[in-house]
Length: 397
Picture (cartoon, helix red, strand yellow):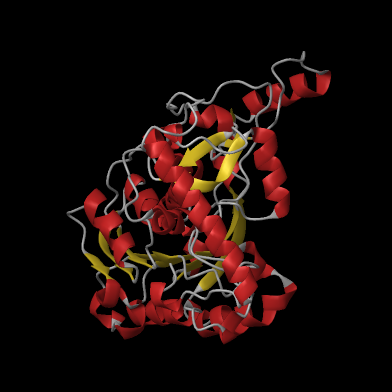
């Protein structure tokens, strides 16, 4: 999670700012009217999601291995590792609201948030011999398109701080997560200079990309993982997580083709479960079409803080086909129900976005809507983290 004080708005002309102001004022007025019961009559009943992410990551017995979390954000990695049986040592996060999310959900954890969670000011040697696994997702903005891909020129680049923590703590294993763009040609030199080279003498590095739908999460989201092992034999034995699910769009209105029948047969043989589409996952009415949600955008990126999860023009077309409104996410399902979208599509709530990201209802996200969406959009999908944690536990045991 990037520092809230280091949010970078885009440079806008005064005319562009005025457009945003008028749009925001009109939306606020319409929302207030709707919540007073003076708006359009609600179209959708309050939805009851069919997807329960808790079922994607059944709690395992404690395995005795201890994990420390950096850049903890909304707790995607923390929750996944806890569910997989790891013991949580501490979490460090610069955003106070994310610290509240962690503390409210796990009051027994040691959580350092706000100024106390500033990783640039911590002497990590205090955790040497106290931590087996170090995991974290350094801010992705320096490498993502939304963050302008400035790499090490971006003050939010915290990968060097993560590497410093690895070298000072010397855990058995570390896990770092980020956007796949980090593996592109543009950042090939950065990966070697900032990540691989400093660790070369002490760690064997494994790098792989995972896709959210492969683990039952109804969203188009790919993430790169760097997993380092202090023990070479462990590194040689390690295998990245294998898919547990598979997404394949099948229209319920049409008979299955021979290819689709073969697909179902292969799914059964591989013991893969079908990944839900986002409408099914959210418990929405059948419209004869379903699909994966586009990648959820963080509410903390872009030209201004926003309550929209829309990430691109192409994503807008997908949301429209799904008949889901991605702009102006509501704080609760009750408020989303009352505030009818102008195109009459289903309006998302914070809880719905959390489900799409793989957070269970048992893990509410706290903070203003845009802050909650920031925590969700920046998080590692917990079921994905759970599978990574399991894959590591297999070589540690």
